[in-house]
Length: 411
Ligand code: DHB
Image (cartoon, rainbow, N blue to C red; front, side, top):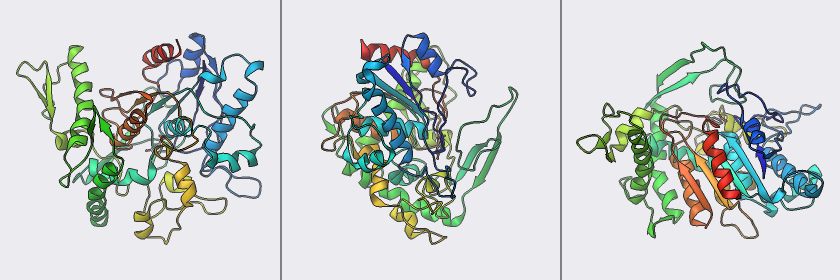
């Protein structure tokens, strides 16, 4: 197998990676572990939202990052016979915006939408489908992520986030190397009246989106009713319950968590109080979480053009724009969302998917990776989805399990 991690974070440019120490975990990074397991590693760079050419034109706005990763896959395939590893066994890996790109690379194999960009780049004229994808906390499905966030953090109007040195308010880019005793400053606050108004408008629009996907689990439709409840919500709760159960089975005492309902001895999880659970997770972002009405989010920047720094990518924020922002090209918005390609014609999605989203990650709502996992599974692909306990926004924290999975799927 060829392990293909990307180094993209915050939709920023990602440099080509090298095996070594992961400056977030302080441990061997995924590329180094992959080599130790006998895999071949290719860790390509990709353009991102801040890249500019000599004339000052932006060169890395959407869809540049995915085009670059596809070009790397094509290069590996074109030269497959000349290089170690098999290009028919490419397994991508990425976290957050990099997880979004890993998802998109896996979903959109060989789709023609990207062809003009690949041609312009001089990419090899060959296939770009991949075998499998590892995806951590993908900041994806951006044009639906705002309503998902408001449905999920329903009526929670205070926020809390970690302030990291050198990071944008909406975190972006590779994390700086931090001193061992570094404690991120907590930034807390309450949403403004107009943000709360936007939240109340957005939250009730999420159920119709979920229902439009016609997703199924165990032969039953996954839906949300007018009150925001229903089979989809129970399904969602099930993943958090499974995560808690695993922790209890390891001997952890979770009896202090009042939102977790268990049998009397505390040994078996029976339910969660969903609204109390999301209060425990805590909202991190103000409304709208991704398509900022003032165009100030990293995602707005991602949807800029060669000459326009940032744009809207949802009808909602476009209509509510406080800065008369312009709307990104509809086709480019479409091309950045893996949900649009899993069932598309003349497209070859990856066979195997491993998706993780930490149980206390609030950079996007848990429902976003869950919808991706469910759609991929409904489309007939093998999906391993879990919500690791106590885990916030991050990736590559369970490399032993990741490489066990890779061994299993490539045997
Ligand atoms: C990332 C995190 C975010 O909260 C976001 O909105 C976009 C990207 C990241 O860590 O890559």
